[in-house]
Image 1: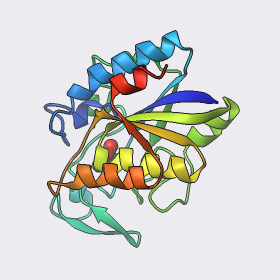
Image 2: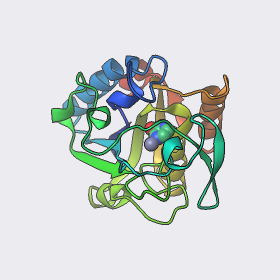
Image 3: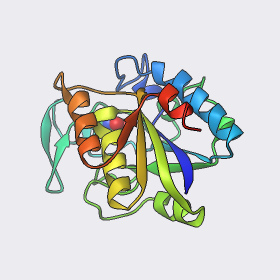
Length: 211
Ligand code: VGL
Ligand code: ZN
């Protein structure tokens, strides 16, 4: 079965100095580059998502008259109010400068609709609209995804759960992920949830040993 590497949101705003910086977010970049190098050797395509919001996105606390990092409701869905992050065309939305972006075969944008958030790289949070990711993977006849990135407890988690629901086999590279952890155990719980849903959890070196 054909595999693809799926890199979730390895963007400046989730890394050191970014608007929604995740602790140790930068540490994922070297893991990603090692995984990319192995994929190139093995002719495994590399796909990356980019959180890509318009400036008026309503998940931004300032646009919903809410306090950042608190919880509310958006379009009938539970919503964390985030600081302004990953605004289209802004430096915060760029990939981390050290990421080997020249090696990316396909980039999927998400979160463009201002009225709804989109943690998963496949669908918005209400599953109303699909991104192009599933279609792209289908035309490439990909059946298995190796997933890593930011943030474990949001975009990685929902991407993995959607991938499993769509019928992909999923391996999560645990050392290639870091989480927001609004609650201290959120990332740990997210990994347990992904594993229970059918994801295989491996470190980069464990996965490299299977190639
Ligand atoms: C993300 C919060 C808001 C993520 C994106 O990439 O995990 N988290 N937007
Ligand atoms: Zn976002």
